[in-house]
Image (cartoon, rainbow over all chains, first blue to last red; front, top):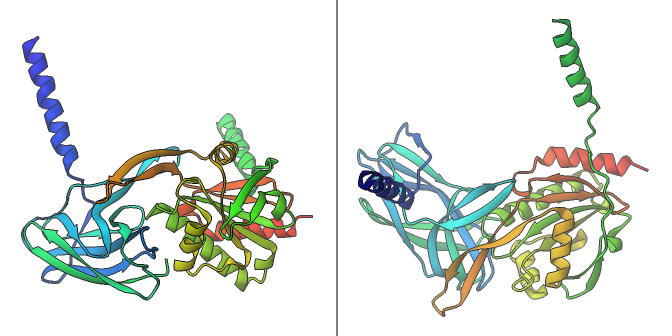
Length: 152
Length: 196
């Protein structure tokens, strides 16, 4: 009986630990050097409302890296989020603590998937406007990203 | 073997008979209010036009903007086809507590939405609940974020939906709002334009 309880606890711990980070859908790379952010863009959003930032991360290094935080003056709260499917054509969104980017791979933050959530905008973000966020990586440190607001 | 061939032919014939517009459901009338604080009765006030209806909440940063952008793309295509005047666009919010008319107006403004034939509406909680039930749209409050001023912002797990109503105000088809096939709904709209 004790063994069964011990085994159950271990399994639950593994599941919990696994659930803390998000499984990444990555693609292998073909060229480039360092950790590069490409094609960033913001969604439009009104003052005090929300927006989202999308981009592609190219980890052209031989080390895995982890995006664990985001900073920006553009909003009161800035977090890593993901959209998820709940079945029966239901969609939801949730906070993600961190995202891993394996060595020599590409990870997309894109509509319907991972995105940087900007909650409580400090100004209107209209198409053509620009703004900046700082992505915090465990390995590569701070990476500043400047992006324009798309019409989408 | 003969039975198999008959079965295959039967399946093909059934699929071949399937209509583009599988539904024909009468929709009740609902008292709503639009982005200009004007009262509207949906779908009654828009009868005579084909209605493209999206279900959204404005705090949604990802799925609802996709739905809204898809409606914008549909509108642009209809302009090219010169049938935009035959269609009315409606974005109905299922978050009436937050999405007051001024919020809906600002949501449209920052996206440069063409409101010539597009209204963003909300209503009282009971009215919106009934409306969602009739359209079989689910919207359940889920994750929350705490802002620095201790205010809470909540998000919905919700059905991803754009619906198409004919000129009589009857529901004819549902689509996944964020992933809608633009060509599919354009074909369906043209079919409705050609309907008596």
